[in-house]
Length: 341
Image (cartoon, rainbow, N blue to C red; front, side, top):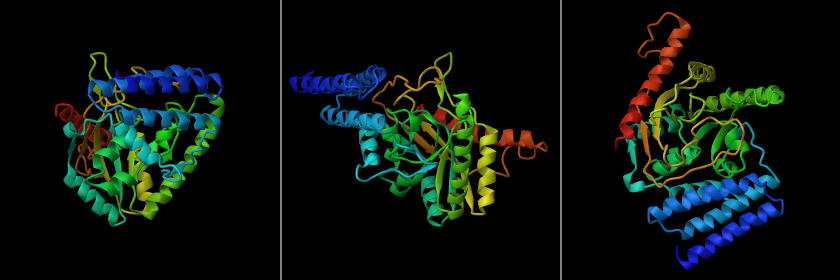
């Protein structure tokens, strides 16, 4: 590390110490942020990437977190990305972009993405049933698409769980996304005294989503697994199963909106960018690892919600399971292909 880099690092550590000592930041975030800083710096250093932009961005990141702790941002059921007076969207892209090996990253199915943009322009809706691997998947998607399909990149609405809108370390990035904020069934009972409030919030989110679908021209990303993919006991990344009830709910909402809605499998291979913890954590405050890595994205052909492998099944619940499996199976197969690119 050269003298200038060492000076920048010491300034960041000093600011982090000052924030904790002054009471502007809880002590537990000191270790989490220092670990995250060291992970990103090491990844960039090993990849021989310039560190100067990272020092500036991380210093800005600290100030954004400080502000969130002082005055937490209140996410509404439908949050539209904030670009003024501070551009959270651009900040997020610039921060995450430095970790992505773009020359080695791949997008499969760009012709399908072009078809999707035409459908959106025609005021039809698109729902992506996708896997989910990192907290920064929305930014990864935007970065991959910004040159070829900028309108799609900027306008996807992401169905987001509680953690990305309540963890101060995630909030600055979440503020730069279009989000439909919902409490997943995995965390809705924690803590139990807030369950009713969370259920009411979800009701308002669903009502807003219904109105958006009725307006038309909306692209919505949802992970029917309800969480991130993880490695199995053998260390292999597994695409988490898709919940049939989640897929059914979106289908019913789309039908109720009476606006044409298309349903597409969407596959992400972003795991190494910011791997999730090995186990599911209930409490906020996970350690974040980071790597400089290529990432991949695949658009697959539309699936007819009434005609799919297993749609001849007479039992309603079994038919829904087979429909969820049809989407999962495409995503799983594409994921296996992407990780070999």
